[in-house]
Amino acid sequence: AQAGLDEIYSSFEFIRDGKVYSLYEAMENDLVTIPDFFSTATVKGTLGKPPLEKMFHMHYRGQDLYGTQVLDQIKKWSDFGTVKPDVYSALTRVLENSNEFFKLSDRCFVLLGASSEMGPFEILLKLGATVVAIDLPDRPAVWNRLIQTALNSCGTLILPVSREIPEDCQDLSAIAQHAGANILTQTPEIAQWLLHVAPEKDICIGSYTYLDSDLFVRIAVAGDAIAQKVLKNRPNTNLAFLSSGADVFIVDEEAVKMAESRMEKLWHVLINKLSFGRYLQPNTHELFVSESGDRFYICDGKN
Image (tube, rainbow, N blue to C red):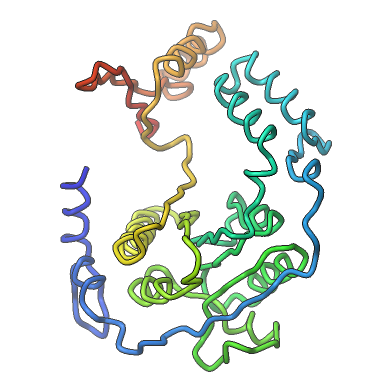
Protein backbone atom coordinates (compact mmCIF):
# COMPACT_ATOMS: atom_id res chain seq x y z
CA ALA A 1 0.00 0.00 0.00
CA GLN A 2 2.78 2.42 0.89
CA ALA A 3 4.62 1.64 -2.33
CA GLY A 4 1.46 2.49 -4.26
CA LEU A 5 1.06 5.80 -2.45
CA ASP A 6 4.74 6.63 -3.03
CA GLU A 7 4.23 5.99 -6.75
CA ILE A 8 1.21 8.31 -6.80
CA TYR A 9 3.08 11.11 -5.06
CA SER A 10 6.04 10.82 -7.41
CA SER A 11 4.07 10.43 -10.67
CA PHE A 12 1.16 12.86 -10.22
CA GLU A 13 2.05 16.33 -11.43
CA PHE A 14 1.24 19.69 -9.87
CA ILE A 15 1.60 22.70 -12.15
CA ARG A 16 2.17 26.16 -10.73
CA ASP A 17 3.13 29.24 -12.79
CA GLY A 18 4.12 27.08 -15.76
CA LYS A 19 6.46 24.89 -13.69
CA VAL A 20 5.79 21.18 -13.23
CA TYR A 21 6.33 19.53 -9.84
CA SER A 22 5.64 16.04 -8.59
CA LEU A 23 2.90 16.03 -5.96
CA TYR A 24 5.51 15.20 -3.35
CA GLU A 25 7.59 18.22 -4.38
CA ALA A 26 4.55 20.47 -4.40
CA MET A 27 3.62 19.57 -0.84
CA GLU A 28 7.13 19.43 0.60
CA ASN A 29 8.70 22.41 -1.15
CA ASP A 30 7.64 25.88 -0.12
CA LEU A 31 5.26 26.73 -2.95
CA VAL A 32 3.19 28.85 -0.59
CA THR A 33 4.84 32.17 -1.37
CA ILE A 34 2.29 34.18 0.64
CA PRO A 35 2.35 32.94 4.28
CA ASP A 36 -1.24 34.07 5.02
CA PHE A 37 -2.72 33.09 1.65
CA PHE A 38 -6.15 32.72 3.27
CA SER A 39 -7.80 34.75 5.96
CA THR A 40 -10.01 32.94 8.46
CA ALA A 41 -13.69 33.70 9.06
CA THR A 42 -15.66 32.32 12.01
CA VAL A 43 -19.43 31.99 12.31
CA LYS A 44 -20.85 31.00 15.70
CA GLY A 45 -24.22 29.32 16.08
CA THR A 46 -27.02 31.11 17.89
CA LEU A 47 -29.10 28.17 19.13
CA GLY A 48 -28.86 25.98 22.18
CA LYS A 49 -28.13 22.28 21.96
CA PRO A 50 -31.25 20.19 21.24
CA PRO A 51 -32.42 17.57 23.77
CA LEU A 52 -30.50 14.31 23.60
CA GLU A 53 -33.61 12.36 22.62
CA LYS A 54 -33.96 14.58 19.52
CA MET A 55 -30.36 14.09 18.44
CA PHE A 56 -30.58 10.35 17.71
CA HIS A 57 -32.75 10.87 14.67
CA MET A 58 -33.50 9.29 11.29
CA HIS A 59 -35.96 10.37 8.60
CA TYR A 60 -37.46 7.30 6.91
CA ARG A 61 -40.45 6.95 4.59
CA GLY A 62 -41.89 10.35 5.48
CA GLN A 63 -41.52 9.88 9.23
CA ASP A 64 -39.08 11.24 11.79
CA LEU A 65 -37.81 8.47 14.05
CA TYR A 66 -36.11 9.21 17.37
CA GLY A 67 -34.21 7.20 19.96
CA THR A 68 -35.49 3.66 20.33
CA GLN A 69 -37.69 4.14 17.23
CA VAL A 70 -34.48 4.32 15.20
CA LEU A 71 -33.17 1.17 16.84
CA ASP A 72 -36.42 -0.66 16.15
CA GLN A 73 -36.09 0.11 12.43
CA ILE A 74 -32.41 -0.88 12.36
CA LYS A 75 -33.34 -4.15 14.10
CA LYS A 76 -35.86 -4.89 11.33
CA TRP A 77 -33.17 -4.27 8.71
CA SER A 78 -30.72 -6.44 10.64
CA ASP A 79 -33.20 -9.31 10.93
CA PHE A 80 -34.04 -9.08 7.23
CA GLY A 81 -30.37 -8.95 6.21
CA THR A 82 -30.33 -5.39 4.86
CA VAL A 83 -27.51 -4.54 7.26
CA LYS A 84 -25.16 -6.64 9.33
CA PRO A 85 -26.13 -7.33 12.97
CA ASP A 86 -23.16 -5.32 14.23
CA VAL A 87 -24.76 -2.16 12.78
CA TYR A 88 -27.60 -2.60 15.27
CA SER A 89 -25.12 -3.36 18.06
CA ALA A 90 -23.03 -0.28 17.30
CA LEU A 91 -26.02 2.07 17.18
CA THR A 92 -27.39 0.61 20.40
CA ARG A 93 -24.09 1.47 22.04
CA VAL A 94 -24.28 5.01 20.66
CA LEU A 95 -27.75 5.57 22.10
CA GLU A 96 -26.83 4.06 25.47
CA ASN A 97 -23.79 6.35 25.67
CA SER A 98 -25.35 9.41 24.04
CA ASN A 99 -24.17 11.76 26.80
CA GLU A 100 -20.59 10.90 25.84
CA PHE A 101 -20.89 10.34 22.09
CA PHE A 102 -22.99 13.45 21.38
CA LYS A 103 -20.68 15.79 23.27
CA LEU A 104 -18.72 17.37 20.40
CA SER A 105 -18.22 20.92 21.63
CA ASP A 106 -14.51 20.22 22.15
CA ARG A 107 -14.05 18.53 18.76
CA CYS A 108 -12.98 20.03 15.42
CA PHE A 109 -13.82 18.44 12.06
CA VAL A 110 -12.30 19.49 8.73
CA LEU A 111 -14.67 18.69 5.84
CA LEU A 112 -13.11 18.53 2.39
CA GLY A 113 -16.17 19.03 0.20
CA ALA A 114 -18.28 20.53 2.98
CA SER A 115 -21.38 21.06 0.83
CA SER A 116 -21.64 17.36 -0.07
CA GLU A 117 -25.23 16.16 0.25
CA MET A 118 -24.04 12.99 2.00
CA GLY A 119 -21.53 14.74 4.24
CA PRO A 120 -21.97 15.29 8.01
CA PHE A 121 -21.87 19.12 7.90
CA GLU A 122 -25.31 19.77 9.39
CA ILE A 123 -25.34 17.04 12.04
CA LEU A 124 -21.88 17.99 13.34
CA LEU A 125 -23.00 21.59 13.83
CA LYS A 126 -26.20 20.42 15.55
CA LEU A 127 -24.04 18.43 17.95
CA GLY A 128 -22.04 21.55 18.80
CA ALA A 129 -18.82 20.69 16.97
CA THR A 130 -16.41 23.12 15.36
CA VAL A 131 -16.52 22.53 11.59
CA VAL A 132 -13.82 23.74 9.21
CA ALA A 133 -15.45 23.88 5.79
CA ILE A 134 -13.43 23.51 2.59
CA ASP A 135 -15.35 23.87 -0.67
CA LEU A 136 -15.06 25.66 -4.01
CA PRO A 137 -14.80 29.47 -4.09
CA ASP A 138 -16.98 31.80 -6.17
CA ARG A 139 -20.20 30.09 -5.08
CA PRO A 140 -21.83 32.62 -2.72
CA ALA A 141 -25.20 30.82 -2.77
CA VAL A 142 -23.59 27.62 -1.45
CA TRP A 143 -21.61 29.47 1.18
CA ASN A 144 -24.68 31.44 2.26
CA ARG A 145 -26.46 28.13 2.83
CA LEU A 146 -23.58 26.77 4.90
CA ILE A 147 -23.35 29.99 6.92
CA GLN A 148 -27.10 30.01 7.63
CA THR A 149 -26.92 26.36 8.70
CA ALA A 150 -24.15 27.27 11.13
CA LEU A 151 -26.12 30.22 12.53
CA ASN A 152 -29.11 27.95 13.16
CA SER A 153 -27.06 25.53 15.26
CA CYS A 154 -25.05 25.40 18.46
CA GLY A 155 -21.77 24.77 16.62
CA THR A 156 -19.02 26.91 15.14
CA LEU A 157 -18.11 27.25 11.47
CA ILE A 158 -14.57 28.15 10.37
CA LEU A 159 -13.89 28.84 6.70
CA PRO A 160 -11.08 30.11 4.48
CA VAL A 161 -11.72 33.47 2.85
CA SER A 162 -9.77 35.84 0.60
CA ARG A 163 -7.01 37.80 2.30
CA GLU A 164 -8.85 41.10 1.83
CA ILE A 165 -11.52 39.95 4.31
CA PRO A 166 -10.38 40.75 7.89
CA GLU A 167 -10.68 37.95 10.43
CA ASP A 168 -13.05 40.03 12.57
CA CYS A 169 -15.42 40.67 9.64
CA GLN A 170 -19.10 40.45 10.67
CA ASP A 171 -20.55 40.98 7.18
CA LEU A 172 -21.82 37.49 6.39
CA SER A 173 -22.69 38.42 2.81
CA ALA A 174 -19.10 39.56 2.19
CA ILE A 175 -17.79 36.39 3.80
CA ALA A 176 -19.96 34.25 1.49
CA GLN A 177 -18.74 36.19 -1.55
CA HIS A 178 -15.07 35.59 -0.69
CA ALA A 179 -15.21 32.15 0.96
CA GLY A 180 -13.76 28.95 -0.38
CA ALA A 181 -10.62 27.20 -1.57
CA ASN A 182 -9.91 25.00 -4.59
CA ILE A 183 -8.60 21.61 -3.48
CA LEU A 184 -7.15 20.87 -6.94
CA THR A 185 -5.28 24.14 -7.55
CA GLN A 186 -4.63 25.43 -4.01
CA THR A 187 -3.58 22.15 -2.44
CA PRO A 188 -0.39 23.41 -0.69
CA GLU A 189 -2.13 26.57 0.53
CA ILE A 190 -5.03 24.65 2.06
CA ALA A 191 -2.67 22.29 3.88
CA GLN A 192 -0.60 25.22 5.16
CA TRP A 193 -3.73 27.03 6.38
CA LEU A 194 -4.99 23.94 8.20
CA LEU A 195 -1.77 23.69 10.19
CA HIS A 196 -2.83 26.81 12.08
CA VAL A 197 -6.61 26.45 12.31
CA ALA A 198 -8.05 25.80 15.80
CA PRO A 199 -4.58 25.03 17.23
CA GLU A 200 -6.06 24.27 20.66
CA LYS A 201 -8.10 21.33 19.28
CA ASP A 202 -7.29 17.94 17.81
CA ILE A 203 -8.83 17.74 14.35
CA CYS A 204 -10.41 15.04 12.21
CA ILE A 205 -10.13 15.46 8.43
CA GLY A 206 -13.00 13.96 6.44
CA SER A 207 -12.99 13.62 2.65
CA TYR A 208 -16.43 14.10 1.04
CA THR A 209 -15.38 15.27 -2.42
CA TYR A 210 -16.61 13.89 -5.71
CA LEU A 211 -16.04 14.75 -9.37
CA ASP A 212 -16.69 12.75 -12.53
CA SER A 213 -14.17 10.64 -14.42
CA ASP A 214 -10.45 11.31 -13.98
CA LEU A 215 -11.17 14.43 -11.93
CA PHE A 216 -12.34 12.21 -9.08
CA VAL A 217 -8.94 10.51 -8.97
CA ARG A 218 -7.23 13.90 -8.97
CA ILE A 219 -9.31 15.38 -6.19
CA ALA A 220 -9.03 12.21 -4.10
CA VAL A 221 -5.24 12.35 -4.38
CA ALA A 222 -5.22 16.09 -3.62
CA GLY A 223 -7.31 15.47 -0.52
CA ASP A 224 -4.91 12.75 0.59
CA ALA A 225 -1.96 15.12 0.08
CA ILE A 226 -3.61 17.72 2.30
CA ALA A 227 -4.35 15.13 4.98
CA GLN A 228 -0.79 13.74 4.89
CA LYS A 229 0.71 17.21 5.29
CA VAL A 230 -1.48 17.94 8.31
CA LEU A 231 -0.86 14.50 9.84
CA LYS A 232 2.87 15.06 9.62
CA ASN A 233 2.68 18.39 11.44
CA ARG A 234 -0.31 17.78 13.75
CA PRO A 235 0.25 14.20 14.97
CA ASN A 236 -3.05 13.93 16.87
CA THR A 237 -5.07 14.38 13.68
CA ASN A 238 -7.60 11.69 12.75
CA LEU A 239 -9.02 10.80 9.33
CA ALA A 240 -12.53 10.01 8.09
CA PHE A 241 -13.75 8.99 4.66
CA LEU A 242 -17.14 8.60 3.01
CA SER A 243 -17.08 5.32 1.15
CA SER A 244 -19.38 4.05 -1.56
CA GLY A 245 -20.48 0.61 -2.72
CA ALA A 246 -18.15 0.92 -5.72
CA ASP A 247 -14.98 0.76 -3.63
CA VAL A 248 -12.68 -1.93 -2.26
CA PHE A 249 -13.25 -3.00 1.34
CA ILE A 250 -11.97 -5.43 3.93
CA VAL A 251 -14.98 -7.48 5.09
CA ASP A 252 -15.45 -10.39 7.46
CA GLU A 253 -16.72 -13.87 6.64
CA GLU A 254 -20.22 -13.10 7.94
CA ALA A 255 -20.63 -10.28 5.41
CA VAL A 256 -19.42 -12.50 2.58
CA LYS A 257 -21.93 -15.22 3.48
CA MET A 258 -24.75 -12.65 3.60
CA ALA A 259 -23.80 -11.34 0.16
CA GLU A 260 -23.48 -14.80 -1.35
CA SER A 261 -26.87 -15.85 0.03
CA ARG A 262 -28.47 -13.04 -2.01
CA MET A 263 -27.22 -14.58 -5.23
CA GLU A 264 -29.05 -17.83 -4.45
CA LYS A 265 -32.44 -16.14 -4.84
CA LEU A 266 -34.18 -17.18 -8.05
CA TRP A 267 -34.96 -13.67 -9.29
CA HIS A 268 -31.34 -12.60 -8.74
CA VAL A 269 -30.12 -15.56 -10.77
CA LEU A 270 -32.65 -14.94 -13.55
CA ILE A 271 -31.78 -11.25 -13.93
CA ASN A 272 -28.07 -12.02 -13.90
CA LYS A 273 -28.44 -14.72 -16.56
CA LEU A 274 -30.90 -12.84 -18.80
CA SER A 275 -28.60 -9.79 -18.81
CA PHE A 276 -25.62 -12.01 -19.68
CA GLY A 277 -24.00 -11.11 -16.36
CA ARG A 278 -24.38 -7.35 -16.77
CA TYR A 279 -26.82 -6.89 -13.88
CA LEU A 280 -26.66 -8.19 -10.29
CA GLN A 281 -23.10 -9.32 -10.81
CA PRO A 282 -21.66 -10.53 -7.49
CA ASN A 283 -18.70 -8.66 -6.05
CA THR A 284 -15.40 -10.47 -5.92
CA HIS A 285 -14.46 -11.77 -2.45
CA GLU A 286 -10.81 -12.81 -2.15
CA LEU A 287 -9.81 -14.61 1.03
CA PHE A 288 -6.70 -13.60 3.00
CA VAL A 289 -5.36 -15.18 6.17
CA SER A 290 -3.19 -13.05 8.44
CA GLU A 291 -0.08 -14.28 10.26
CA SER A 292 -2.17 -14.57 13.42
CA GLY A 293 -4.70 -16.77 11.61
CA ASP A 294 -7.46 -14.19 11.24
CA ARG A 295 -9.51 -14.66 8.08
CA PHE A 296 -10.74 -11.67 6.12
CA TYR A 297 -11.89 -10.94 2.60
CA ILE A 298 -11.30 -8.17 0.09
CA CYS A 299 -14.64 -7.10 -1.38
CA ASP A 300 -13.93 -5.61 -4.80
CA GLY A 301 -16.93 -3.45 -5.70
CA LYS A 302 -15.19 -1.91 -8.72
CA ASN A 303 -15.36 -4.97 -10.95
